[in-house]
Image 1 (spheres, rainbow over the protein chains, first blue to last red):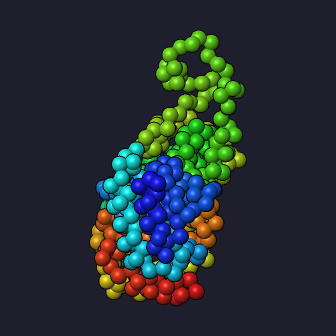
Image 2: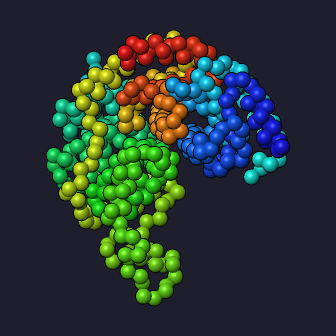
Image 3: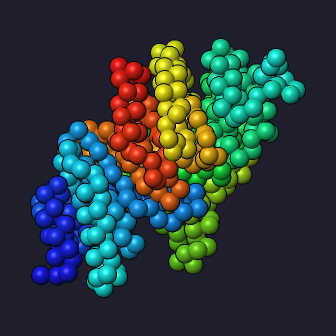
Length: 120
Length: 322
């Protein structure tokens, strides 16, 4: 099992996190855990677009990175974390402890960034 | 005592005051006065793209009553400035593309719309306008092939026989608008059937936005608050409370574009209806709230208590949106 898969599995061991995906900046799936297709591919495409909007807009404001973006709907939350050369997406229910999720994502992001395979 | 808006030393202190005064005059049909207020505002706040966009909207409305092509050209000039100030402005790009469509510059309209769709692939309006532009652009097979196989670059610069031109989507979309303006300096032929849509504020919308704006006072003492923006359905800031000198063009654009991309994301993935977007950026946390017919964007310090912020948003929604 790859390091990335292990990182995602550990992240999803957190009971608040339903599934997680790592994608390239242009939306290609790198690794998926507990998210079925075609949802994973659709999320990859849409969240890479969201990341592009953020990145372009922040650049205009003189910044080059963001920590995270959370979309909350009436069904749950989609977390988007900037890993530098890739993006981490995680899905949660609505009634979760944001602090715990943020901590788990922060740890997973650090683990993933350490992985050499992410240098695309 | 404040002097009449647009008069010498009109006493307006903020760009928002100029915008509101110009909108009121436009809604009363006093286009020249409204344009005068915009000019004064633009002179005082040259880095504010929203004044240019409003001026372009007023000119487009004026064109509908007095259809002189130079009025549309002036509107395009304003939009060129607005896009230079804020290259992410959705409304400026949509309006510019509509003027190009009206002026039969279909390839330029297409270039701008492709730029909009690059970041908002689900935008219905941009897709519809692109389809309209493409209807008039001959498909590659329909274009007569040049007899001699000349160098491709030289061919690309030569104008095709239909009088249109080859457009390369520029990295900087304001260049596309600027070049289109230069091209339009001669004859500006217009398509009489095509109507440019502008978001005129209906009485209902004005009343609704006023309620949203009035209720913002409940965020007044929120700890860590940097600014609040009420953004209308076309992406323009309606009310701004700016405590930390935030960029009043780019922050609302960021919030509006992100709102649209997030709404598309949740609906396409059957993830329910969008409620909040929370962006943790280096300068602060932006909270984007869907307030029906408008978007609320709050910018707070990264160490602000988000639970307190959320409680305040809930109260705001109950009181302002019912």
